[in-house]
Image (tube, rainbow, N blue to C red; front, side, top):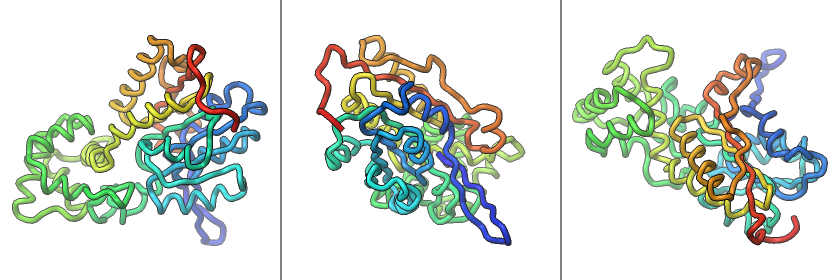
Length: 319
């Protein structure tokens, strides 16, 4: 996930997207030998290309495959990564399509994979995408516009108990039943179509005044359901286990306690079965300087593991 700053001389503005935990990602995926590391690194959530830029600059002998399911974001990434020329391949794909994307570019020696889970700031800051409760937009939330189900479909179509469970389990919202009841009562008068209408009903149901907006967890839960983020994460972890060479590293950045717990379980089980060496016993978090300049880094959690294949054949050959 990346943060956007807007600045510029003489009234002009420009957008700078800053990736979270970039230095830590480079350090772990560099495998302690940045000038010698060769092969492919996959940035599974390309966004504006911030992490990829940092990796390509620090690891001069790697090639990079950048994936994202959002065609609008891919256009930004291609422009930002153009200076790296043929070292970069960009493809539209979800985590569940990671293996097919690697096959398509002929990648075999995969030495690193980064999965940055959640919405990009490019999506969060665009009212027209429907991710934000701060600006009015259509209640959409699809990262991939080819998905059929939108957030409006869920809000207007699911029954009260299913909505409450979704908000509680996928968003960690402890007031989920009260919010679900308010939504169902309101949609009887008119279906929800816009983000601010939903945010207003949530705020009136539970009140405001906290450190975070009362709609935060509900919007997170809806986004996760629309984009099937739980299933996509599991597919991405499985693909990393299949494709990484012996010693290849998987770095996962999550912004949700449930996602972090899933990644922790994945690495722990893999370590107990001799398939992974866990390099982060506790999740790595942003330092003070990054927290001050990038508010979105405050909830970022990074876990890293190294693939162990010594007793198994390594997939493929050279880069």
